[in-house]
Amino acid sequence: MICGDTMAEINKRALSAFEQEMIDTAKKILEIKLGIEANVVSIIYKKPELLYDTDLQIEDFHNNIWKVFFEIAHSIVIGENKPVLDEMTIGFYLDKHSKLKAKYNEYGAYSTVDKAIKYVEVENFEGYLSDLKKWKTILMLCKKGFPVKDKLSDYADMSLEEIYNYHEAYLNNIFINASESIRSYNVFDNMQDFVNELNTQKEFGLPLYNADILTQEIGGFNINGNIYGLGAGSGVGKSTMAFNYLVPSAIKNQERIVFIINEEDEKKFKKELIVWVANNIFAHKESEYLHKYTLRNGNFDEITLNLLKQCVDWIEARKQECIFTVIPLERYSVKTVIKIIKKYSSAFNVRMFVLDTLKESCDAKTDEIFKSMMRDMIALYDVVKPSAKNVGLFVTYQLGKSSLKVRHLTNNEIGQAKSIIDVMSVNLMMRRPYDDEYKDGKHSIKCWQFLGSNLNSKKSFELDKEKNKNYMITFITKNRFGDTDRFQVLSECDLSTNIYKDIGYCNVPQDW
Image 1: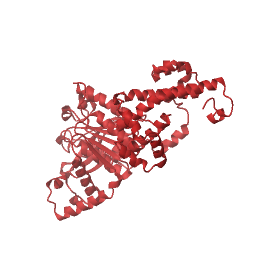
Image 2: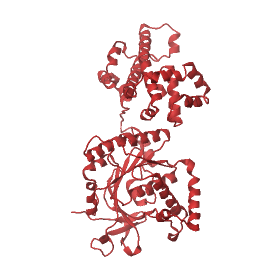
Image 3: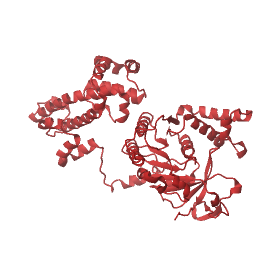
């Protein structure tokens, strides 16, 4: 549109000199943009996975040929999750879309992109993508009547940011929206709507399963662009606890979850799922619990076989929901993790991700591990944050050896890499009680339970070894959604049966 008129309206009357100039300028821009669109689309056909790294839409293209080829690529790769764009795959897709097929054939079919693929370099994709956005923006300016005719040759050598700086005074609105999707807000606006939104509990995340106390303290697992951390010493059960917290909650809330793992394989999580289903769905008393060592030993008796059949049937009935996906990595690299998050959030609308376990990337470019891990965490946040994919990431990591010498766990136990928590919204640490922290011990811990909703009414107790309970103490060392380190959460946690439940609070004295 030019000056508020549609092209049809303009064609009904004589064009003014200004309108004719705008039309001629727009044609020049489209001529420049044609080659860029061809390069972008051709590279996508050469390496389809690049689509997961962009927010390209059909509106970014103006030439009909490349609109058609982009629409086909986007529908196959993103819509149908097919990673290859060969002639046969495209043919099968177009058999279901006759109108699109007619245009595809009109524009030379597969031979059009096949020729272009031979001349484009994938390494230039980011540059072409930037040019595509830049000339789309310049075309917007032209259509809005801005005087860009005499600046086209200058724009060719300028970045979008440089063009913005050049026109900063009167192009602010257009270029802020185009460059980094930055928005400004009057915080005083729409306050009643905001209160209504808060009332819907959108700020409260998914509950951690059977962790009512911890859930209340941290507000659950908020999957709107947040990273949660879980640190513990070796062998404490980080992976199992991540499973126990999140997978049952995902099943209950019909929320898909992806575990990206680098220290186990998918069979470990098959066992975790079977044991959890057996003991949380079918077992009615402790004597009926299925232990992990039973699965390890094999040679099942008839009772165990019947229980396992029940578990398998329960799991099979939910298989099509694709709730729980495990992706084992042969070599851990944060770049691979980021690609997985982009792919599964775009193609399958996954909002919950678990990285088990955070460590140094195999392709790290520094010998200083802590600096490498800090950069990796920043890169992870840049992909999950609200202005990007807006998903939740739960990260497990191992505490340093110094954690074995202290009682009250703090962020200092992460060591030199403690800056990894800077981008976390919540950080948890956990350990088992020490022998002298039980009843009658030198450092016995005082614990209590709140009675109902009245926080002033509570019942105290001590850890009792004779009860043969598997206790776990969870420290909340960072919490953007509530209090930090006000007290610790005490749980009964049997990693052999995947039976977990918060039972109260405790106060572990600081190590001075």
